[in-house]
Length: 543
Image (tube, rainbow, N blue to C red; front, top):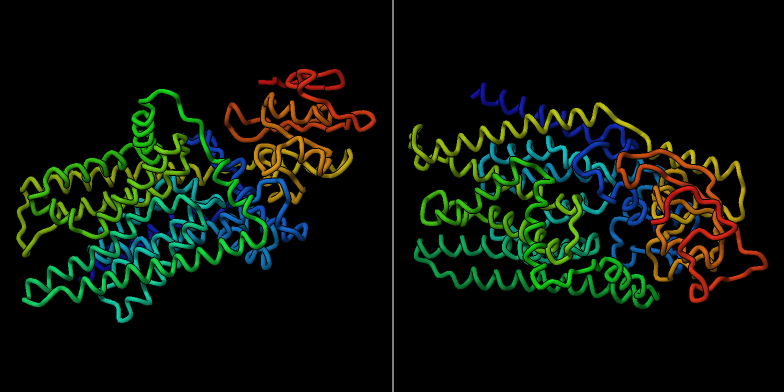
């Protein structure tokens, strides 16, 4: 029908315009005054997880002994950036452009996954929710690990749900195993997505078994093939991951690999009931993504479970992609509950699959088996109610996304450049900065830096080893950090630079580090080094 084709063409144009917003103003701040103000990714993660690529191009060596080196545990993203920087040079725009490219791929992969079991309009509906989401607009433009993780996950799922129809399912299964290796080496939390991937591989064969049984044929061959596919995927993962671990251990980087896991250990409360509170907080944290769509996704899952005997309930519960989506969200929430430290960016993976659930729920409710249309049936009324809520949410989200895209600020880029210019105009020992945002500043201005928060060596040891000339903190000084610095240096507050909107981190304060006379080393055992000492010039609070 010509009118229908025009409608789809306009819909695709709408999606394309919103998608392109993600590729403009890539050096701009993470939008200020959002509900996700306190997420640390905008201060640190782009530099931390890409520092191997940044250092390799700028300083000739990707590994800085004793400092934070995530690449042995998470090599995929820095490798991709390392390749990219050969063509673009080291820049924050290039790194974020790579993340935006993955976002575009994720739109196509999302469409293909939903089309594997559903109609075109539900796939486009899900993609619409993705491109209009202000949450995903903010986090998909950062050079962080979530965009590539989502891409590898969706690629593996697209292969898995189509296995029974493939001419070489064993080869495809091996590819799935390799993709799962890439997922784990992109972000280790990918292990919590394994149940969804297993579901995507097994359930299509179960559907094939049912169709063969109804046709009077034996289903043993199908189950045998499913088992062989699972073994092929597992073998590919074990071999690929084993080879990488062998390389890490042989090269002497296992300490860096192990440190990534110890550094991410959050403090657990002593109360016995803390897991229940953590689970609730993880569920509640989904509201960071959307106040309409996330509760709606939960209602659809709950409704399908309660109405499992109804045609709509069976349609959803037996749909491969719906089950994959539910398990993926459950896996992400389980990780956050175990970690007891949810951050908004952790919900980026769950957001995609929650939007899939909403689109599939609307599709199932509006489905008309055998072409029978009952406009006033409770099922279709519920379906149109879901669609109305989805349109309302997409309209509100689209306006918010347009607002973020139209009001860009560059406070952090400006602060990083002004900080670097100050250091170059006022030499003070080695041109090396110590800061939790140091790697982020290196990505923007190419100023060499160490991380004061993390590393296989404590900060005091790193200071003695690398002898930096500068230190930068956000808003105030941490007493523990001050104690480490005081073992070798006194501090002189030199300059400050406004950036971002977080009341705890909106002032980047720069200090000169002055070595103690005669190479003296103070001992924390002999005096309190967590307070300003004679010789310091500190105007900000220590807390």
